[in-house]
Image (cartoon, rainbow, N blue to C red; front, side, top):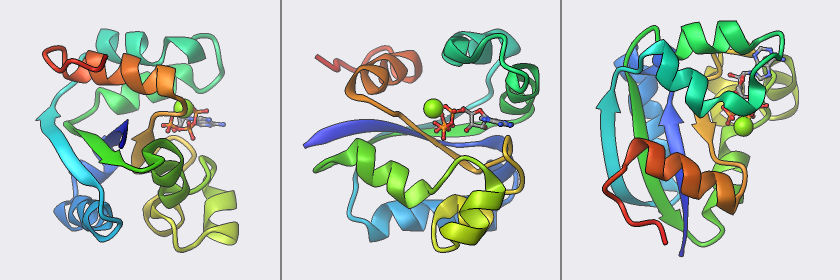
Length: 141
Ligand code: ATP
Ligand code: MG
């Protein structure tokens, strides 16, 4: 089984109906929940997590948003978990997810290009990095 890191972002954690809907999608798609925790990020935690986007026009907005309230992080296991979770999330941009993928998490629940409900790792390397950021005691190797 492959592992991925999924995050329910603050826009969704703030509304239990929304975060429950995301949690239900995790269960419906038969992911194994290996670990889960809720935490409040500081701005510098977000800057570190999203350092690959430093300098992009949305970076400041993203850092402020991701530190604006609690997030819930999951380690999920499934065959081809990384691609499967990203498919269930749908496209990053809300206009695209609403129109081309209304049945995805972002198509259904995303608010804007930044407040797009969930995160998912995009490669095996980023999954290892992101899991160790959120779950430093978890042995990813
Ligand atoms: P994530 O990494 O959260 O799974 P992603 O991989 O689909 O999303 P990235 O390009 O890695 O998208 O961007 C990371 C996050 O930055 C996005 O999820 C979104 O919150 C924000 N973001 C990305 N592009 C934009 C944009 N054009 N405008 C506003 N916010 C953006
Ligand atoms: Mg990404």
